[in-house]
Amino acid sequence: MTSPTQQQMRQNALLSVLRDEDKQRLQPHMLALDLPPHAVLTHAGQDVTDTWFPCGNALAAFCIAGVDGQGVDVAFVGREGAIGGIVSNGNVPAYATSVVRLGGPFLRIKTSALEQMKLESISLRHWFSRYADCLLAQVFQTSACNAVHTIRQRVAKMILAGLARNSEPEFRMTQDQLADMLGVGRTFISRVLGSLRRDGIIETGRGVMIIKDLQALRALSCTCTMVIEDHFDKVLHGIYPPPA
Image 1 (cartoon, rainbow, N blue to C red):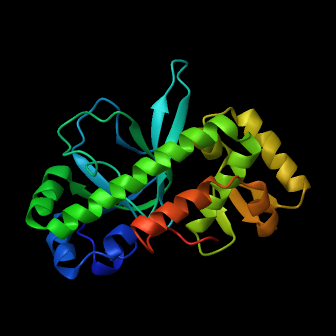
Image 2: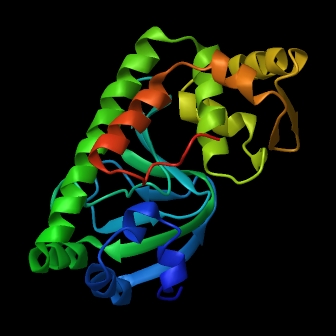
């Protein structure tokens, strides 16, 4: 675990657009780590002591556990954002569990240190407040998506979300990861992916997704990601991953 370089900080879009003086405030207090899928960043009910910035292809999620033990992801955070200590001061327990969905590099800062930096810089405070608005919008949109869209549409949406964080039409995403992201059984995911393979839209193998027909995948997906991208663009122009 080491402090990040400027190049590593640029792999998180939310950090990359900060003023140089704000980056210099944060950098000495940050650590660079590589985290695997399923790593828990914060457990529900625990105090939010750390703030995490996914970098590159990494993707994390806020997960709500149901009464039956089955979790549902209500918001995803990639290189466009951060998890923990953004909305509150970190002195209250987390409502949701934060978990890594696609492994990769993360930057961590103690929430208490981040709060001190926000007191020293009004630009930093305002920037993270605007991000908090975008994160809340994503939670709203995900709730609507889960209520009205089919599993097939939501699977296509999640594959596009993973693809947006990769530079190639091939990336690692397993059926189990998709099932965890969508809060559905693996059997449902297997059926949907099987139909996508038969339609020539994707290929799968050993935890790898290969996109064969991007236009067909986009046509199949719901419009929720586009709505979120539009809101991000209005509030925080340029930080959301561009369409694949």
